[in-house]
Image (tube, rainbow, N blue to C red; front, side, top):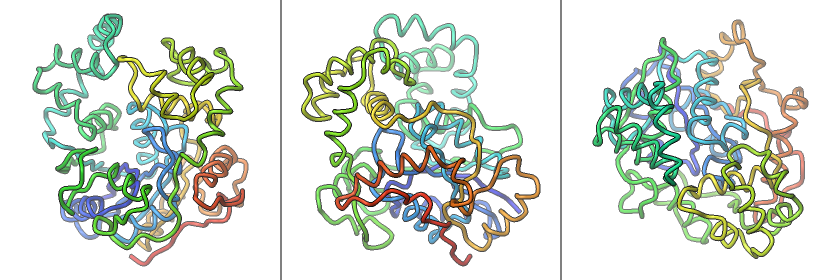
Length: 375
């Protein structure tokens, strides 16, 4: 029986995600176990998720996922490379023998060529001089990759899903087969049709109080979470830190800590903060991640210490039962019994709860057992 991994945020879960799960099922067979590693309450672009992780995991289980595991926040809110390595590590521990990912150009050979180039000593040697010329990391990375492959191949890195696909391939164990699936559309594009909506556009609709039901797998229910509810608290925290403290957070080097500190002294909103700190070399995602890492005291990323189950079907539960016999990490299905393991995540969930329109009390992390659905 095939066990296929998928890395996702499902922020929010929409018809395009359901389509991807359906296409994977068609490729690998009805008996396969689909295991998703999903970001929790804080996501890779430096934001809170638009709804809680249990709701998103349950939606995935209803539309094809058999087992949904959480990617811990320190890994989820990291660069694409660290994000990918953390997720692939969790999925490998969960016993996958294939990894499926959506990409704008599902050219497996070209994506693998880029992965090999980025893993080469030549890439490591070529990148620093390009950065020293003032190029942003993505631009320098693409230019260095072009010298090792071709311009047209390296251009695939400019597309967000292709970029993540390459990072998955860079760290994929030899026994795991890559399964690229075409993901049409543009990540941040408007919403032209129902088949492949942009999650970013859906979040904007929801946070503006408009309906996104046409693009979702079910009518929206529950609260909508928005970082703006934490805006002044975040600014207050940044104003209390000095440059030296900011420099201790991952990706805050190259003068970013100094720029954030200076911007925090005058900024009256997060948009003002990021506009004042932004340079050509810095991506918005990196700015947002460092801001939240500092404001929320997010620990530095480390190797996964447990597998946290958010949702499962009967088939997923059967796979989990077999996995427990060999898994080197604790498998968390009863969070109240693992308070020490989940302490850092619980603290971050308490902060996420303040992003709701109607704030929730502390302790949500320990009130939710995995969502269990029939296969």
